[in-house]
Length: 177
Image 1: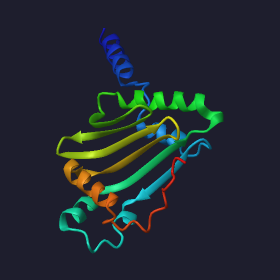
Image 2: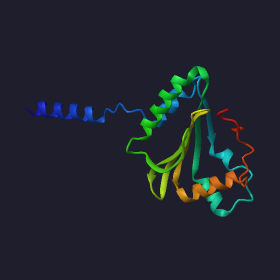
Image 3: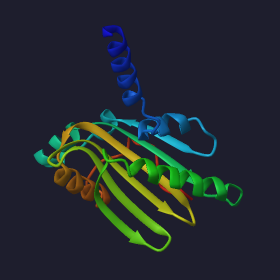
Image 4: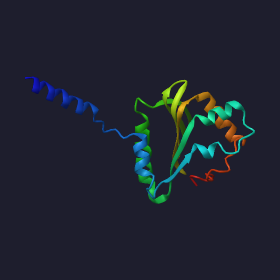
């Protein structure tokens, strides 16, 4: 009897722990060497280059970032079917309960969504998923320790305004062209 109960408990744990849902990390690893995709892994050391002009808050925010992973799928005439399926698969992964939506933006054929993992005030991963049904889609993952979402958004704005020296980064202009 004890043996039967033990076997049932172990089987139950096995069934519960088996999860067939693909994670974002698994999706990224699966596609980083795929010819259809463009992939970049950017270590934090490239983000913290010569940024003497940054404020103490901006520097502190940069120090919470470990790595940035970028995966892009440029849309071409010959891969439209694959594009739709892969975009839907990514959207499905991001619908999992563990990914919390922060912002949704866009309309028509252009959309962007921000998700995070962790606590509201101390996130461990920020995910940016953008798509343009004329150019393709891209997903960026910022991983770190206890990143502050408000500080990250301010840092991203300083990046857009040219305050952040990213001369050590690969040029991502036209990433989805």
